[in-house]
Length: 385
Image (cartoon, rainbow, N blue to C red; front, side, top):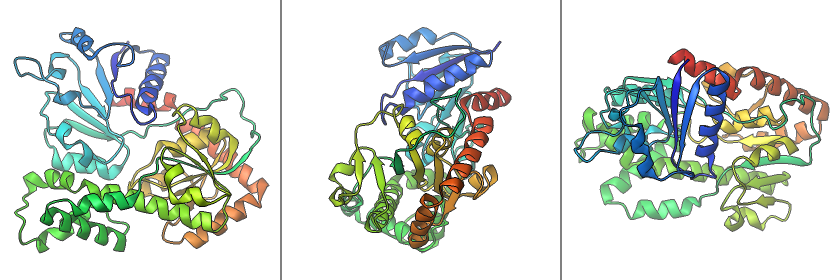
């Protein structure tokens, strides 16, 4: 029997980290593991010291800051626990440079994108392994595989951020950094298939004022984080505004939308302050769940699996990873962000074809149920261990 320790330290992002930790713990327990979970909701951070000196088969945390935590004498806290440590990161590694650069004795990373996995292997050679691990969602009616009643037409779940505020932040950056960030944004908008690391490497030869060497590349990626933030916010607003102007019946779930330009449309329903676990019932009530990948060029997102597990047709932009996992038009439907007029047609065609919509939704449900449940993820983790 494997002995696993899971940390749930960050009560942020709609409590999604706590949900992920609890779901992983339940799945590993069901798979025959003995699981201990440390929750910041239940205990103070000082209580973590009780794990020092103990042995586990693995320790997990999500978007962890624990690798930066040191004991009074200067040693790493995690090195006091006799176990490999796995950091499950849920966005681009550039946001986690200060954590990933820590040279723990047995450091591993799990991520949502094949490109992120390769980035970690290239930029952090001290990390023992990097593997793909797409986090997933929950089937809120696991004993009922029938197609449920649908009250909502098209659901979009996610936080709203005003890209204009990010634009203003870029203007306040030191001139060199601000200009570099603008060039990155322009290049990635001109060539939307580029990842930020690839785009930055394309720009390096033209940056005469910069002495960027390979050893400091992750630091420069981190310094240009506003490029990633801007593109995600800009694309999300442009996507939803286009659909709103075409009278697509949208329901928006997430903080910030009430103060966005989308609030001006009377046919748009806005639901704010919905906890992460409550979003699953929204997926189950929605005919279509619209997804936009957060600049993951070869990755995925838990929204995709959450919608599928709750019989909602997932309409998402594609990636090579998703194209390997699902068949377009059978399990879900892909769209092209660069052709939003066609996306509008796709939505109305699906809404006007209820039999096709429910058939794809059900195919996606069974595919996700078999291959993308938390139990399937637990089995995959145990194969890695």
